[in-house]
Length: 166
Image (cartoon, rainbow, N blue to C red):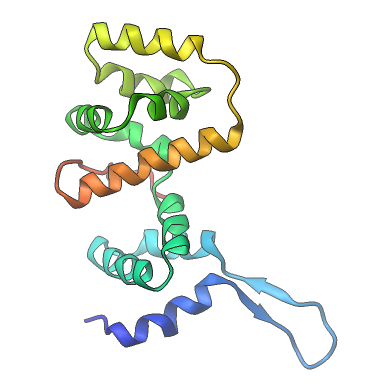
């Protein structure tokens, strides 16, 4: 079983390891968010959940960044129709409009198909009327949708796609 007091010992190096030899060679950076996410994506689900939960207690910002890398927004389109219906119903429509902005039809359509035809028509109209959006706002909206999906999954209301993790 995973011991709580060992977590900092193993997760701290994942944040950003800097190695430097005694000679004046340049510093080598290893690890980081992407590497930690790749490692956790290869773990079994209970183990990854345990590490991530404990990492949230140590550093919420880093845990969020790793979570965002493990389940990127575009992989949510692979979820089952019922899960997407719940997600679309729970997320604020203005956030979803921004999150879906600029996506390919293949990724956008599963979200739109989970809406009623009337709601979908209104949603598309709003999306088309929306002016230019900063990339950072789009990325923040996509991260918010992915975080809500993980929260709903923790509550047992959303089935995360089995494929598509990094």
